[in-house]
Image 1 (tube, rainbow, N blue to C red):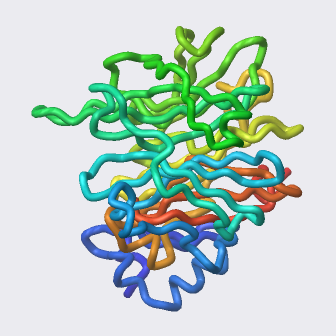
Image 2 (image 1 turned 180 degrees about the horizontal axis):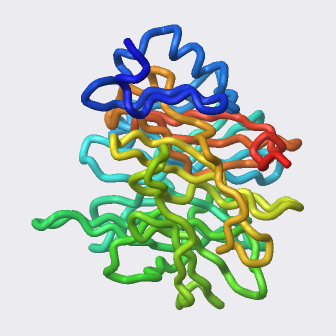
Length: 339
């Protein structure tokens, strides 16, 4: 295979990848190229991936288990994952791990599920942020109808005490932009200038909104969007909550190419004005290479909703091919722009 016959194959910098196109498929990418790609990426995939898979004995999670939120509480990482079962409806399950990799606890029943017409087709892609004694969950509420789908952002919350006791008493479910197609919502983990800040996706761009009370949102602004000659040239969306560092807010995001390959990148945002982008990765930090990332319900997808920082490393939990849940680790210093 000649490199110049694959328009999205590049060796710029230290990155090597092949995306699907009419002339080249990742399925046909030979072993030597895929092996080079594995060695040159920043990520360190867990060798035991995937860490969560469907359980056929549970009808609600018998088909697909993927995109998950993650938070660190009481020296344990708590994972809320999206699950699809026999009826095709997305529900949310619970799992926990002490080391970040090995699952030590997993709920036999869903801990969150649709309860109204606006989400009767599913509650998708949870993201968690902690505010004192309250945990706020952002997710996508899905309603399928004769003319297609309506997906919109929904917010709810739960007391930390109830969460830790597995008393799943969720508070009111809010619709910040009722009736408007929107998704990929994530809240910054603390207020800035006294306001809650939410990144969300009015396709194809990442936008920001502000709120005093989580109910009314205003000052909606564009943050950044696709780049024409890049791996994220179709659409972009936030991953897990941004990570606060001395240098600013480090945000992992997903980008999609016109060939429908989902990869992860990183952006550095101003600490006081997070809609100001200081830096954006030229190349992805994670893209589909392993078989479990290339072959599944939706091929060639890595998609994250949660990350946890431990000892200057970030554990990124990501769904692969909308089928299973995986984890990769990064040194925070490697994700920052080089001076």
